[in-house]
Image (cartoon, rainbow, N blue to C red; front, side):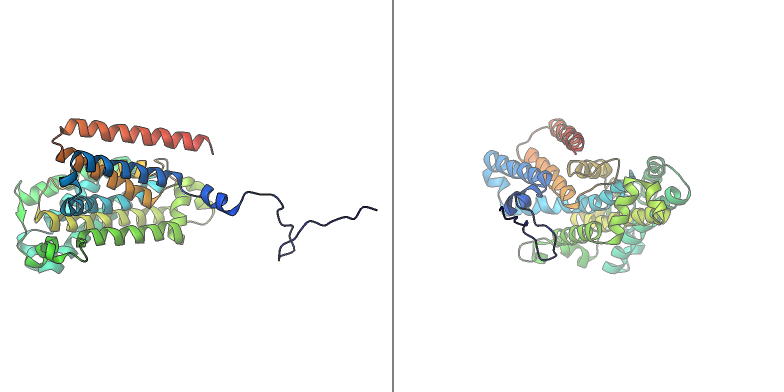
Length: 339
């Protein structure tokens, strides 16, 4: 008589799988291939820089400079990532950075010292974000049009405030943040702020209800509404967040440049969108990766630094960036078609 052998069961009484891939293969399969690819691209760029200009590129001060320059646009990109994940767009981030930087460096503002400059930069950024959010969420304006109008208005107001002149910062406590004496364990304070914003952004997007609602709105706004999410309020909050990031970036730029100019933040909107795209954020919304966006910023900043050290023309640099963006979009489409 043949004895029947019951399949093994786990502690819950459910049938345990007999055959399956080993645990290490499952973990490897869950790895973010895109992130690993971006890390590979960044490593290749570092290698190229080390080969072409070993003394200059690998110098500690140059690497600190790359990270510092990436910090300003990086903070903007974190806010942009949230907006794009929700299915929106913000073309006004560069202009908001310019307006916040010049408003925070007027003679009247500088009389209030460090706190006055920081407070003004953040308030101006959040205020612009509020206008964008109200127009888009409650005015039912298309994000492209609303933020394009803000771009023009903020640039014009920044020019009016400065009258085309550079506003030099005279507050020592602000300028000291850009000095090497302010570095913590060899890390510039601006980089530490960028790292903090990145970590907070990652936690909010991936570990909070706010982040899940953002993804839901970007994936299907009507389904999100039927599920009980206040879509309009969520969109308002997202543009407030983008404005906040612009305000912080404006203050970092003031520290880095030691001045406020109406030309600050030029083309930041394009750089932020491009970094988010190559980092894996879908322009149609519903998916985004803060870490990927940050790696995108580092890749673009490293490319700029390598081209500058090798005295290569700017047009070639722009062509290289464009090629990277096209390649990233093609990979995105291929990935989407295989899932």
